[in-house]
Image (cartoon, one colour):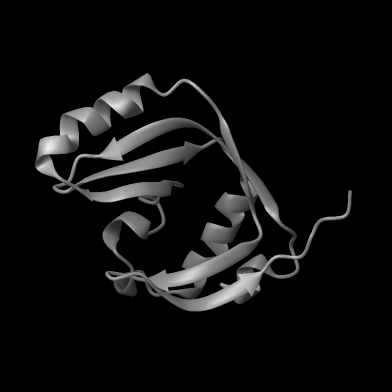
Length: 120
């Protein structure tokens, strides 16, 4: 991961849709607009890891860029969560200033790389 991001700077990512993985359990996530940097980082990281060590949905060809918003959504709240996702009509931009390598569950940070501020 540290080699993949190298000396690249902070990354501004725009999210315009909220989606879900049906589960169970239901997982809500924000879908980023296409970003070549994310694709390049994922390809670089994937090239360095034996796919057998990755969960199926994170492997090359299966990975879908996303930002998890909620996991373990109770069955009684699934309809509300899906309605929220379907009604979202906005845009959220996030400036990522750190890249973490995590293991889960539970989420544990294995490695972290602070991304330098990009020059204007």
